[in-house]
Image 1 (spheres, rainbow, N blue to C red):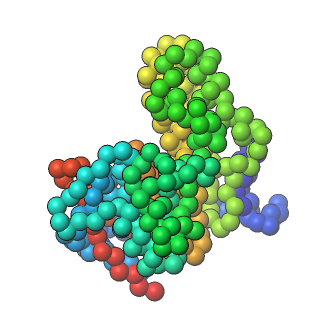
Image 2: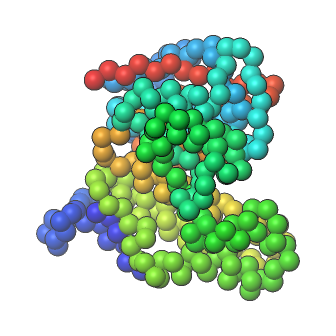
Length: 308
């Protein structure tokens, strides 16, 4: 179990004891966590092989595939939430792609960018709506993990104002009390809110609680120093970046935990995909080069073969 208590980060094995501590070693370089790519068409490691196909993915603005510990496939698909487009045939919708993976593999999960208190069939994302409705049809909604925690901290109104409208009329004190202070108040109420429970490699647990989370908190402290001098739109961009990383922390807790799930699919905005790629590349066994997509240039899918 990895846990944080106020400003003190403690890392202990569960059950904890003073004499039973992890020895922490950090990665020296990206190469320590990645194997070389073999060629442009085929990627492989001990358990999973990727082969590029001519099938394209409708409405995908980004596509990445990574392998964790030679046996877990992580697929990240980004979308523009309200924008859709049709690729030339052969092509497939994001929802159909997810459904095929979930139905084929009982040890797979899909992470969707919405909060548990919201109705996913009404979320402002065509892909999330379609995925939920399709998996419901196949009785597979238990394979869905909602991961967007921002409204838990900010409330629905706060999240709406940060990402759409309202913040431009706020004073510097109101910006602080509505978009920065809620994070620290929630942690004060529950110091273990960002704890890691379960089995994590020591370097991963150390990174998440001792680097990733403190970086977010330092960002908030920096923003406070800029409230008097920076334009509101610049402050908004910095706040959105900090809250994006908070949402992604809860994704990383799933992706990097040692358990029996061997396939995760994440549907998110493109900026989330970039942030997650920047973190995950240090802990992956292998990666397929990230693709970007738009109505004029669609994303190509890879067929994966898994060996036990």
